[in-house]
Length: 427
Image (tube, rainbow, N blue to C red; front, side):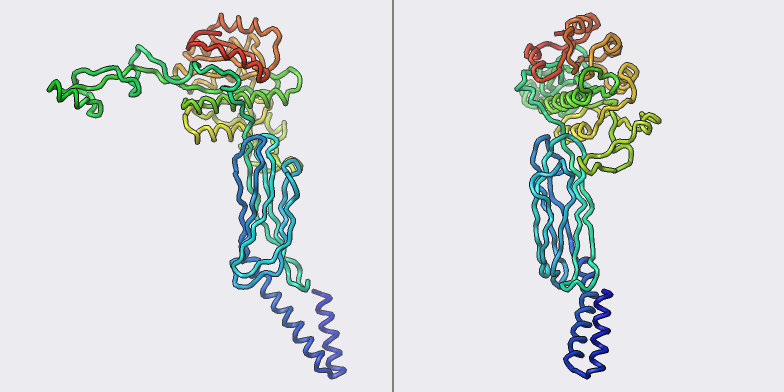
């Protein structure tokens, strides 16, 4: 702009000195271009609308198409717009979005790129930088931003039917001699109407035939909900690569939850890991794009502040989405040890709930904690994720204490689950 003003001043001096009409014409045109650009540019970028379209929740390993849509809502064209999207290195899949486009009045342009979900987590996409200016470069460029959006990558899910998970698991609804409630899906017969019976249970056909009010009867049942108790207290994991084993524990938890919901069962999630989103900070790593976790010292000052609340057992796909989102963000950390946390964490659950305990190993202290859950009226099942050559001893210890135990250090270790077992019978 300074050079342009100097040029106008020089032309003006020449025009007065030489008395040449053409120079005055050039001055008028240049001043008009300057005024037009100064008026147009702020209004042009103000009328520029941008939006980012993509699937915000994806599964591990998926390619995620992202569309950037720019729309010129104004009546005047925009001569050029530079579009540049910020994407973390580990999310990039193909060429980055960095293009220049012109938009006419009420015109729309779409830009496409892809990211790849290489690892579970909560990621940032963007921000999008939009730069525009006049055709002659007289005025400084104007910059606008489309704020960042966020992408949740679910943990990898292992199809448990493929790996041999038995269908007759101790989840769901079982018949009971205790009349806690009657299951409408289990008709048993009819009986005479009694005071207090609901009209909805009246069998009108049988009543017309017998000329006496008859009501339907159903088998009594107990609803056996399931809670996944995921131990992510990092010092409890001592074998090999701690990061890989805790990731496997999260994958097992996600796979079990997905399987149960697919079987129309109620499932919840309780964990002593940390949710970085709960800290209130929203910093993201520039290389990975993942949400940054608080420092170890900050967590140690108040571990409970970063531990997410329990997700109570429910069924349905929306509830599964809530569980998978939590498992996408959760991280292992030195919070509260399993033996100090497990029993108290389950006190809010209903009597008879099956608790799938996913932890590193089946030490004697861990088994004693699960035995306390048995005595409290729960049905715990121990699932350890560290390799254990002497797991037979753990299984026998668990049998004596009244619960089943499995070592699932990898997909192949789920093979023993091919043998179906009944509720309350250890494997």
